[in-house]
Length: 302
Image 1 (cartoon, rainbow, N blue to C red):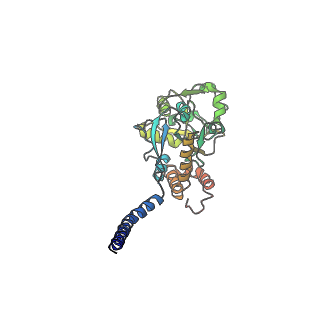
Image 2: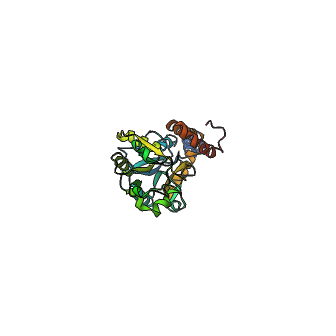
Image 3: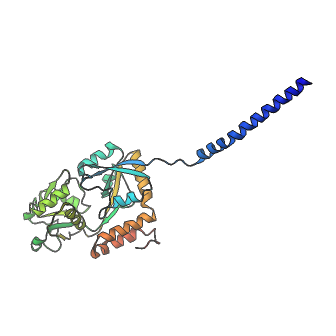
């Protein structure tokens, strides 16, 4: 009898201890289950932005006129980060896949380039057509529209261009077939150097966007007056895209960039930034291009 009572007491005590342990452990188990069931936030992708200019001179990740890469970063929601690395035009294309996680900003899309890089689905910039940039004081020496297929002999070696840069489907074949008319500048800050040569009249003109010339002149403190002459056959706006390494990491970066660029908030910022930095004539030129790009976003104001 005494043994049975003692056995019952021991069993009851064990049950109390077990219940106590369960009641203490259950909240911890529940908390652990809740934490494990939460979605895991991926770490941002890390990319390298290859650029002709050093970040100390022109940091493309920071706000500046028509600085659409900085606008992209403003809307990224921690999907990716980029550090800027200086490289010439030709070096950028050769390093793109060596680095594996590199991208370039504002690049013409072509079948040849798509063989070595992934391009964003939508353009990051829409530029009015390329122009022949001259000193305003020399305007009387040139026609209203310049025909690069019929340049006078006096122009030989006097048209500044950047080595390995694409100037579009109309001008690229002319540059390739008649290199004797062009002065090729390579290396770092080649566009800036060509503008300096133009100011000193070491070339008679350069191929560039009018707005870009204005930005660079302001940035590096150049005061000369320039004039932008239309080029025959080059009368349509140009698209600039983001091109990334043709690697698995490059694919992830460009897919993530496409996601951001499809957001209504980015699209509206895209329109606003372009309208803010072009004059009325230029805005009239690029407005139809905006309409094409945004036909799937009819609710956005333009």
